Image (cartoon, rainbow, N blue to C red; front, side, top):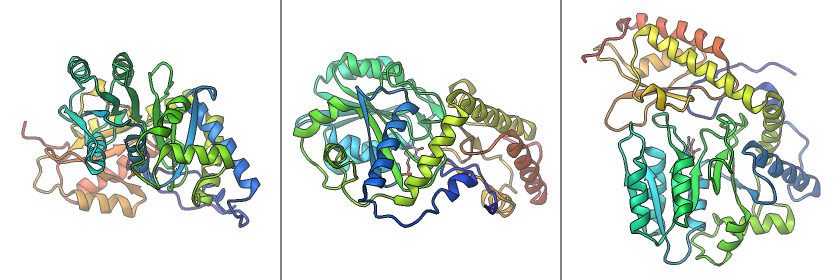
Length: 377
Ligand SMILES: *Cc1c(COP(=O)(O)O)cnc(C)c1O
């Protein structure tokens, strides 16, 4: 097996993959309607449940061909009964995406907004639930990947359940990285795509959710033809297959990615991400860079860094310098502050981060950007 050039991706997914995952895609051609392929997907669906400690007697996983956003779309358009309202607990770009999905489907919804660098106020969440007994679905984002703030999903989930609503959580940037337990975390539905925590390829997304709620949704309004949770679930149950063509090669890579995930182990993998995250902070501290989110509120997976007040600072130039040397850094996603992001996803370890900071510092010196970084206040 020939070694493939290794790039260190510090963007928020897709992440750096192992060569064994890359090569898992090189297989003999197969028609995905063959029993052999259905068998592979059955094993994959069962293994996905294990990543969040979901018991197959309560939960199921449903696969879709698409990027991670398809999961948010599907959960929201499929799990709201006639006349039901959606509450989005929103402190960032990904929850805003859920609000936009409500708008596109014309769903009655409440966009409960909080500042992007603040945790949601749980008293306000409860008040809104109390005042709106027609809320049937509460949605939020676990790790708001735009900033790296970690939301209190366990508490929000408990409130959703207290007021009789289903709780859907966008766990795309935590699942298979930061340990999740659907029971302890009060999650009815969570989701991710193969290229993030599982460290496989793009094109496969999945929802893990309560089977009873999916079955209930059979009678809810069908708002999409391609993106309906019950229809895809039902097709899987009847045939073992996706309704439409699956991303065949990505599924092979995902199976390999999951095998490597279980070999590494949940705790060990989280410890590795934590090492990487700490190394990112050490490197930034050494160069005097500031981050947006209070340290104790950070997810441990994304660091959102504030641009220095330096006339020579130029993100694109610094990015290109690093990119040419095998390190990818990523722009921010906050409208009010100029930021860039360094993420701890993927098959990388702390040494990769130390190597990155050597190059990053070189870039700063090369472009005459002050070290340590300067800030006006
Ligand atoms: C990556 C990500 C998504 C999915 O984004 P796509 O561009 O559709 O892959 C959704 N939610 C969160 C929190 C993410 O980090």
